[in-house]
Image (cartoon, rainbow, N blue to C red; front, side, top):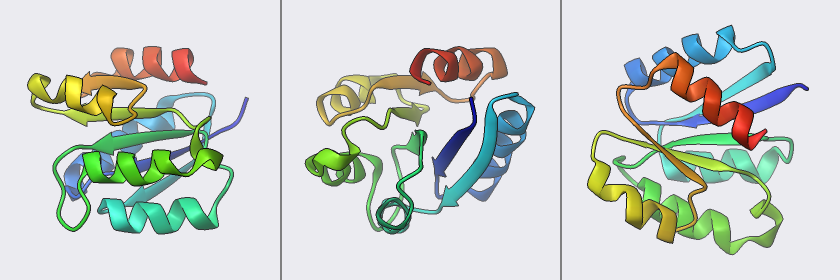
Length: 121
């Protein structure tokens, strides 16, 4: 099954690391990137084929929580799983309450990421 994944993270190095991991996954065929929640919302409006979102919590302009609230308010997006990525485990409850499907603690490990992809795709 071909998967299109959207990475939302303001840190260039984090995006590249995630991209490197995702390219190793046999089902990931397309990878899109956004530097903040605002850019990500624009991408999601234009591209209805996104299968999974990897979302950083702390970003400028529109952060992860704000992105989730806006993203989940549109019922057309209800089926797209969002995995929140954070260095701060205390953000987990807030992420789930805002509409996240899952949570991974940074630094992201390949095996954990692949487990989540299998679970949500």
